Image (cartoon, rainbow, N blue to C red; front, top):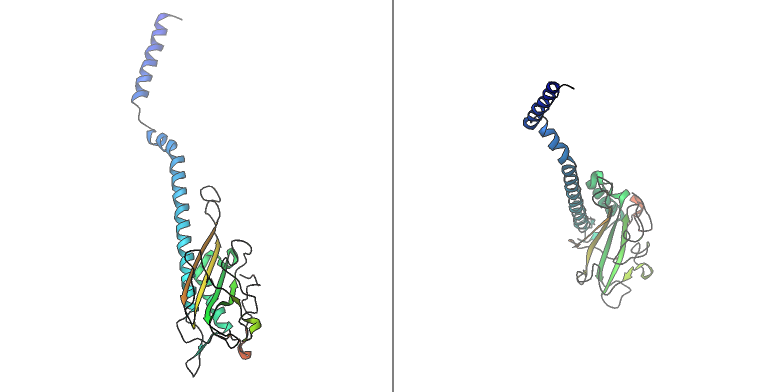
Length: 246
């Protein structure tokens, strides 16, 4: 190859290098390509953590709302005493289902409502702390979903007999160090919600888990604690805890 040709090629290459060195076209695209995986990872992780925090907040509020509602419902009689009916309990459950919206609380969790009472029934010799009755809904079952703090038989509280008196407890309900006990001649509506958290991105950032919250409130009215009523003219299916329905 003639020297002049080689010189022209070398000169052209040097000129090309100079142009490339100073060419800034496509810089933003390259930078975006390098940073996109990091942005997506951080953004996805932050979004998932925010969704987990929101779900925790919603479950805690649902538990508190159910305890509050259950502490107020019932049919007031002419004597000023309120009778709690199975229909009232079912109505409170309907309310929490609607409040949970797209969470599908019934399909993805378990809700337990317990009446922790400190009363002297006709068959008692003294005031007794007991889980007089429990009502539930939700499809999930087993460890982590069913009650962690005590159970009562399905027939408990359905009449005023000792056979259906429920389960005596001397320690109340709740986690160790935070147990709740009912005052004498009163009752606490104790709520447990166990919900299977559904991550937005599978298990990529946060693994599926059971979110657990409990709440309790004193009964607000002069309630009849002998039983949960189910009048014949308006009888409904009891939401007993041997049933698993959404």
